Length: 212
Image (cartoon, rainbow, N blue to C red; front, side, top):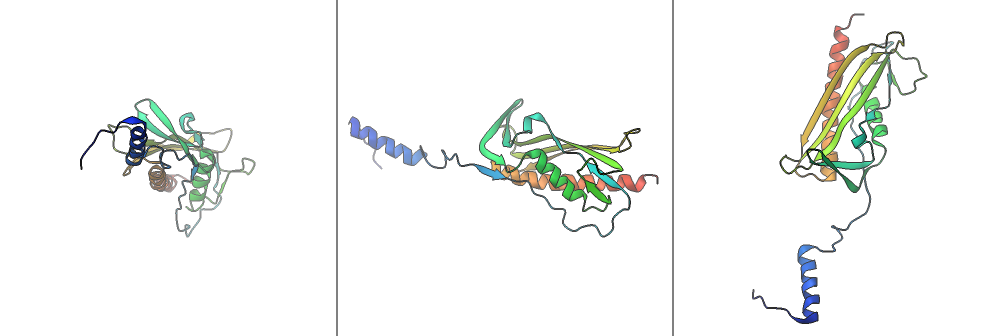
């Protein structure tokens, strides 16, 4: 292919058109401000064949660390720098979404006779949960990952005791092909499934060793 100099006003216009086609300047993809909505939806699968009797769990609303409390998906782009991904949001508030996912999972485990979110319903135990990390890792020096970290505190519902019965913190880092919102959400789904399965195993182990 021969390259010739393009001069004059017409030449400038032609050059801009060519650059736009080659580099995608002004393309729909680069300037797409269409809102995209996501959910992190997990399912334990089969319901436990047996349920323990008389062990009601009150599930407090999941708390989200302030950095990740908003609906907009967040990428980590530096050691202490995060960036919101405009037009890419959760369909509902992260707190509501995580609380619903946790409730649905726990009530299938058989570890509790009932899992409630109404504090007026009498309960034997209280579960406090916090999400301390929820981001896509886009730092150049690290592999692309979906990062999820949660803390769990199981308490005696007796206000006179209110002692910690069980606690754990879990961090899941799921490798993804590229740090894009769809990939990150898919990674969170996988990570949340692994995390909740681990919590279930830990709780099951705790109850099996607990004195009547």
